[in-house]
Amino acid sequence: MSLKWLKSATIVLAFWLPAGARASPGPEPLTLKAHDGVLISALVYEATQPKGIILLFHQADSSKAEYATIAPKLAAAGYTALAIDQRSGGSLYGPNETASRLGKPATYEDAKADLVAALDWALPQHLPIILWGSSYSAALTFEVAAEHANQISAILAFSPGEYLKRSGAVARAASRVEVPIYITTSSAPDEIQAGRTILSASPAHVKTQFVPKVGVHGSSTLIEARNPKGAVENWEHVLAFLSALPKPPG
View (tube, rainbow, N blue to C red):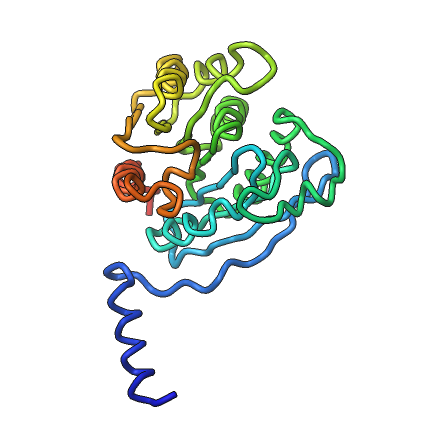
């Protein structure tokens, strides 16, 4: 391999990085422990001088690999991102180490303990904490935010719905959430309406529902391979919401 080729490759890499951004190191593996003793596998994507922490939770039958292309973009935008394997999940995007280790089925409600473990990891860092959920975990973010009202700065919910056993539980939780909320869904009318119902229950002053021209279920809407015609537009709206959030003091 010639030196000339290496120099060219370096120039190409620099060209594709966002203005003012540095190349981030690869994600670091981490193991969290839920209050009930379950060990949770996770990956941390560190941002340089982070302005906040985004906790990334996956959809049903999925894993932290759902965020393999999403988390690096969030880190480049200035947010340290933690993606976890919830105990209710599977291998849709890649292995779910937590579910495999647990070795028995778990409900969506069981997985709330995993979201809280991620929150416990983030709290000592004294940065704004943003919950990001996909499908069933988007529903759970409203319960976690309602129960930890003073510890959460915002919610991004991708395809939330009444996925929990208790009828209307998500809307009831949303009625206690006052932080800024961003909701988006697939282009399906039933998903759009479900998101609208949950959002309307919240007393938050900042509430955004983006209805995409082309969208797919959950956080997958931001993955170009899953949503080639809509991912770019969806990303624009997500980043605009994040950039409009109040900046931490200092």
